[in-house]
Length: 486
Image (cartoon, rainbow, N blue to C red; front, side, top):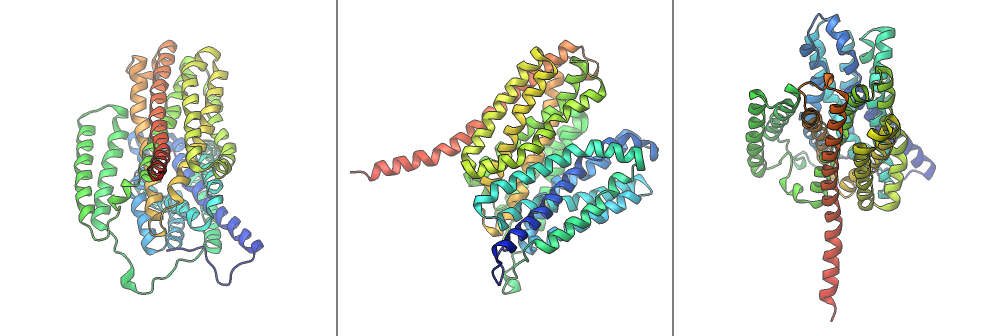
């Protein structure tokens, strides 16, 4: 357990310095874990050549990292609640840094993949516990701004990965894309060790709840099966995908049964009946799926339909992350000013407008229309993300912040994975071709318009869910006041 309380009470200047140092450490942790997701993608062709391996083999350098994060992020968050968040975050940063060294010196592809899985375990702790620490450390009036900064660092890490990876490979070879994490990891470790509050010690060892091993293994099985089903086959539903989805469904049923009987469950099922949490998780998954659509559909549209070369495609695709970088902190401050509930709805309205613009503006105004639509969609997403994370985390009890933070990150990851698979399949179907890379420009344009029409519907569903969640308490209060009046 963690606490922001210190004895003696720090002076205002000292407290502000501690807040800044803690936020710097948390932000760097988020940056590194996000960078690890994107930096290896650009190196896959080089790795295939270096290890004399096929693309199907080297893609596990990326998949091992993503699957480890997805399958273990909730369990790591729960373990932080039990064993102490500061302790586990320091262990996660250390593991991430050491695993980065192992990746950088790996003599074989198998060792590299194993080291990437270890790196993903460290990243899972970094992702889950940074958000939990924000609720631990910062007052409610500043939570939104801190969440906005974490969102900005996540966007920077995702955006920086491909360009930084390309530069490092060209200048120092593929090993540099992993070794670059080492000095940054050491700095994050130093900041976290220096500024994060110490874990509270329980009065007696028997007060510590047990760790749900059975639930952890079952949830890991369910998430791994689902992630693989969505990843392999590029959205097609073959026999392997269907078997994996069936395994995930059966595993999910068993997980519910195990958790209902566990003395100290990994996820208390009663938590999911909390409207704020369930609404936040559902809307986060829907929104993340739509944002992934821009990364899946955008490059094909820009190259095939608008005829841009690879350099210009990369330049246009960088607009979204750049906008995210500059809009994250202002979005967080707006959350603190408007309130999380109002900001969630406002952000979703912006995303509906941006998604609708993507169905119309690029066909009329070309690249300018595409950029304008992205410039509307992305700030809406940043505002939603900061507000949704704040709304979920701000009132969570200290004993559950780690696991809830893990659930929030899991919903986002599952949305990204599902969006890449299903929205990619929708795009291919709407383009009327089995291979979008060779489809005629008009077919690609039609496919993009249809895909983002579906995206408008998905965001509209998220908006309706969020609006109902905001309206129900107000209606209940109105009815209560009316019943009390003579």
